[in-house]
Amino acid sequence: MWGTGKVGLIPVIGAVLLLIDSPMASASIYSVDSTDYWKIETLTPFARADRYELNATSGVRIRYAVTADTAGSCVQLYFSQGHDLPPVFQYLVQYSQEDCVQSFTDDFTVSSDDGTEFTITISTTYDYDMNYTVNVNVSKGISDLIIPDWLCPLLALIVVLIVVMIAIVAVRSRRRNTAMMQAPPPTRQTWRPPPPPPPPP
Image (cartoon, helix red, strand yellow):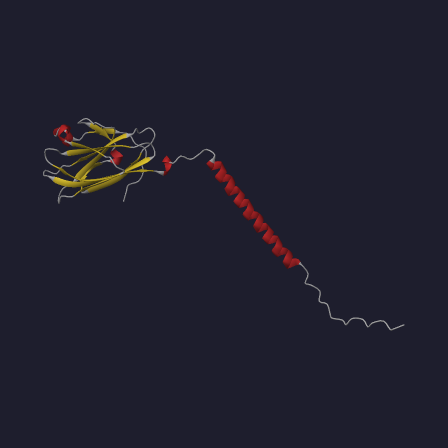
């Protein structure tokens, strides 16, 4: 299941000793070039990190997941703002997984002040070659929809009119029922034969 949206956040320095000991020049950099990106890769002791760079605008939700496929292995994920990260880089702690785990999933909704460039770094503390699967899904959230300024007042007016019409119909129906209950029963008329014709002159 995907993670929830973000709540107040400050970038912090990512003191990832693994990346300092193993130069980032040896890490592969991939471009996330589709809205539903999926890839299987291998990390080796000589290249202990891979980076996935993507672009997303305000209102877009970035969903990402990584799973260690090799038995006994584990993965770490660091979500950062920007591209071309240095060996010691900043990452968003709330949207990252610092401990080495079997799998990790989360999502990040881009705000107007977050920029448009993001990087997902996949790493491991596993000492041997390990395979992993990464999936990045980029989709527009409801906050990205363009809503005209006049639409909300119009919808509010329509709702008010519907409520008023329902109230009028209910009041009329109640009055009709009350009038029928209070009206006297119709008088009963007996049948009488028509009068005889007048006598001839």
